[in-house]
Image (cartoon, rainbow, N blue to C red; front, top):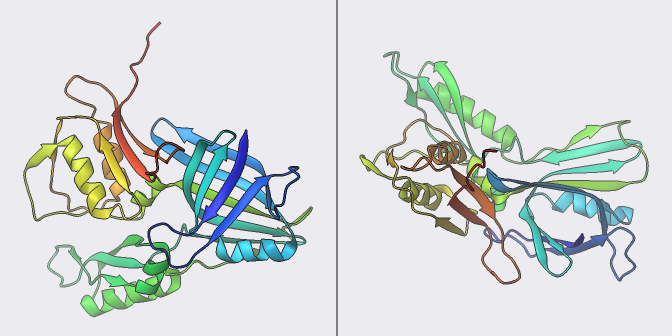
Length: 296
């Protein structure tokens, strides 16, 4: 049983103070906001993965939540202070009959470049990296790489990138007129912090050669894990390349490396983990050996 859900301000960017506590629908307590339809997912590969729930409250409080919940930290606690989920809000849906409104971080991008042949030499180059620092200060860095084929010069590629980032630097609400029904409520969709590694690409060409898988995992997360507070790795001496130059998302690289296992063919997993009542450190990523497969 989940006893409470806490919505907090972003613990990394800290662009404003924010705190709301929700209790289960039906509880009789001094609370103005109640949750129901709680659905959390915890995966062997990925750890604390996703969470969704609905919020019931007065209409003015629901409107405030729809406007301000995106990007907030979410903690779900069971009775007896047992942690069940830790992550951030990535999508908010407001059911306000007869209509329905949605706002999401999924398409938000605030750092972008293009891979294209800009000088007609048959070689693909990167264009200028264009950023929106106001968006980064609120939601963190979220990168996208566009494929441009062949464009007529750097200026042409840059103007396309600027138009793209101007459209996507901040989340845009979408309306489904006539799509709402029943009583008003807000539904929040959340993901564990391991998904923030999907916001960043990882390129590194300054250092070549190889190193152990455990060390490479720590290096990648240390470089682009803006929202990850700590990395805990079990020893894995599998040799992997230190050089990456393919504009791949960090989470994809990390999951692929973990799937290599170790020198004894043990399966390894990458997991996101939160904090507990006895562990004040949250937003953790674990690289750990999976439990052995039992064959009947």
